Amino acid sequence: MADKEKTRYSDAELEEFKAIINSKLTEAKTDLDLLNDTMSLKDDNGTDDTSPSFKLIEDGSDVLSREETSQLAVRQEKFVKSLNEALIRIENHNYGICRVTNKLISKERLRIVPHATLSIEAKRLQS
Image (cartoon, rainbow, N blue to C red; front, side, top):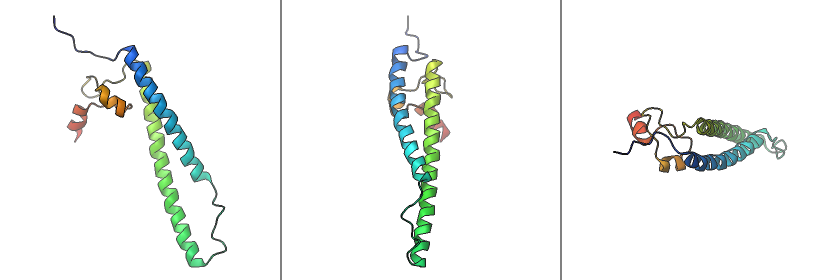
């Protein structure tokens, strides 16, 4: 009798992934809070009392920095959302199943990218 191909991860394996995700989620939320705090801080070291040309350069730098910070915050929010969705998949016992091939995503991939929904095989097909 041949071994039947495994269709889902065991509860013990899911717990391992849950711990990895919760750890990454805590870190991601901390990073997101820092980014949001950075964007909401008012610059107390303004250039009001310096030369007009320096003020223009400084203001332009502030705008670019705020844009970059905003983009990072948006990416971080998306990452937090993806991690939360992975936790839901764990609760539903369908975590780690490729949404294209319906095969299990390798443990190695999930340990590195715990919010992955595609196997390497499916990812290559997208290219």
